[in-house]
Image (cartoon, rainbow, N blue to C red; front, top):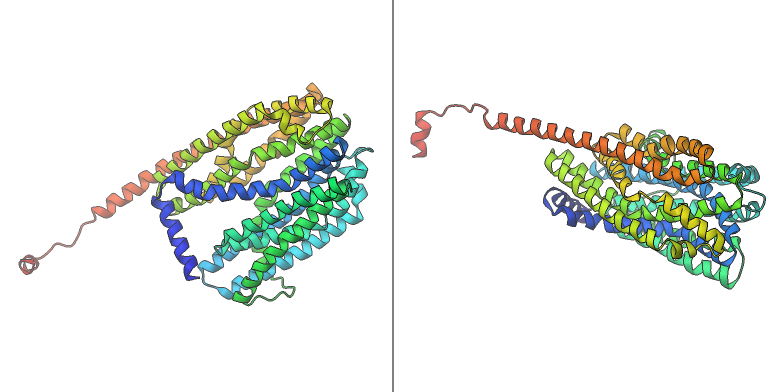
Length: 479
């Protein structure tokens, strides 16, 4: 633990006085790699089934996406809540509380995931239809979901242990665990989809197998935690700890699950327009999610730096960090956007082999990402308000773009423009979100100006507090 304390102290010093660009990169690069590796799971499955089986199989994976998102959302809820509680217990030097938190988190995961998996399996047919599957897509979705839900427990275990390891100062183990899963998924996908053509079942088997291997590595590191903190693996739920975990992690759950909600609505709306629309939205969604990785990595890296300096009442540095983060997000977004606009055909072509569908998908994709660089400021605003402990406003901003803006615009534009309205809805929601984000960020930074003035005035008062007069004798003694 002494080593961890030194590491924390060093991080604090960097946050306070280090070169902002260097500190941002130091935190952002591992975050980007972690997000990239995590996103590869679904993209690799989609790529293999699209090329080896055909576009209709992609439709099956598109229908399955909300189910997968639900399971990982629950895992993240517990992971974020538990890791925050673990970090707090470490600060309090309360080892007894720490081991109860970890045991509680794993028990909560096991119970919740078992219930979710059982319910999905029992009501699978109704769920797949509810998610918008057409008659031709249904068999693919059924085959994929039937197998991939088993991996939910292993994926959630890896995420929870990974976040706890990060809270304990070991981010490397988490990165290696998810990297093992992503690399193995590519290899096993090739074996069971291409070499031994098992169809979408092969892709599902590859996903579950890679999640098991990833969980095995995480468990190896968990054994060290278990030994160090004397953690029992018996089922253990404490009401106050469970409530704390759920409360802290709930906003993350809402943010993650909003993607699933939007996916369900899109699938149902587009199912009336045939399989092609569902196939295209599946590919476009996956590639566009991939584009957000650098943006989210930088903004999540910004958060602890802002939080530290806000807590230290160094408001000028808070503003400087936010401004430099905004510039970094905008520049990287422009590079990603330009690359995708130029290479959209080969990128989407790695998923879709049918020429007619590919041509339509490229047009729609370019509409979807048309103003992509503008939306970066919206994400900066979300993480900024999280950092300064404005949880309520941060949560509202988090669900604002997807649930409060995109969904109403989607229904209006589909009524006005048909299927094409789906793709126009994306840039329309992005521009509204960008303007809203810019407004709230400007307002938030102006508050920093006010706080800095107040802090300066307080410092001046302390400087000019009347000191006790010295006696003549004291001057003589000095001489």
